[in-house]
Image 1 (tube, protein in one colour):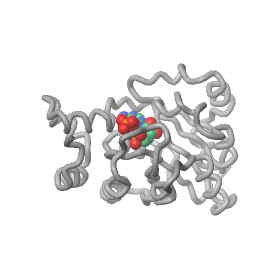
Image 2 (cartoon, helix red, strand yellow; image 1 turned 90 degrees about the horizontal axis):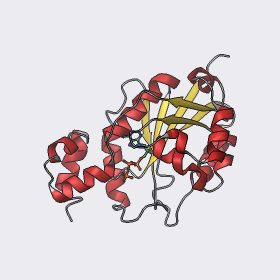
Image 3 (cartoon, protein in one colour; image 1 turned 135 degrees about the vertical axis):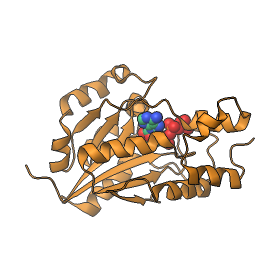
Length: 222
Ligand code: ATP
C-alpha cells in the first residue's frame, strides 16, 4: 500500500527537562516511519509523577529543543495538555486529533519501554488503537517482556513492520529495538541538584540551548 501523505509522530512527555534520549527516540522513529511531522506534547499535570517543574519552564525548554531537533521532519510543540489544570489523558487527546485529521493521516504515539510497562494503568489504554499506532523504543533498565500480560497480548497481535505504519491510519504497533540510551530526566535533575562527579556527563545529555535555559533560570538546584 502507498504511504499516506501525512505521517505524524506524537512524543508526549514531562520534558523536565527534554534531553538527548527524547531526541534520539524522535530521530529513530522519524527515520523508520518516514514521519512528515513530529509533535512534541508536554504533559500538563502528569498524574503519575509529583514535583514536576512549572509548565512554563517545561514548555520553554521543549520549544527551544524543537528548533533544531530533526533536519528533514517538521517539528511542532502542542499545548493541548500542558495548560490543563486537571490531569489530561493521552487516549482523549489522541481521539481529538483523530477527529481533526480524519482518515488522511497516520498517527503514531511514540513511547519508550518504561511507558509500555505502565501502559495497562493508563485510562482507556486499549482505545488508543482506535485512534493511533504505537511506536515502542527500547530503553536500558526496562525489559519489554515484563509488560503486563494484557498489554503483551495486545502488542503481539498488533505488531507489524514500520512500512505498515506509514500506509495505515491507526491500530498497529512497531517495536524498534536499536535504541540503548541510559539517559533520564531524573538523573539529570539529580546531578544538577547534587553537583555530582558525573555532572558534566549529565549536562552533555541536554541540548545546549536547554542547558543555557536551566542555568539562566536556576532550575533543579534545590
Ligand atoms: P523522568 O526521569 O523524569 O521520569 P524521562 O527521562 O523518562 O523522565 P519523560 O519526559 O517522562 O522523560 O519521557 C517522555 C517519553 O520519552 C517517554 O515515552 C519515555 O519512555 C521516552 N524516553 C525518555 N528517555 C528515553 C530514553 N533514554 N530512551 C528511550 N525512550 C526514552
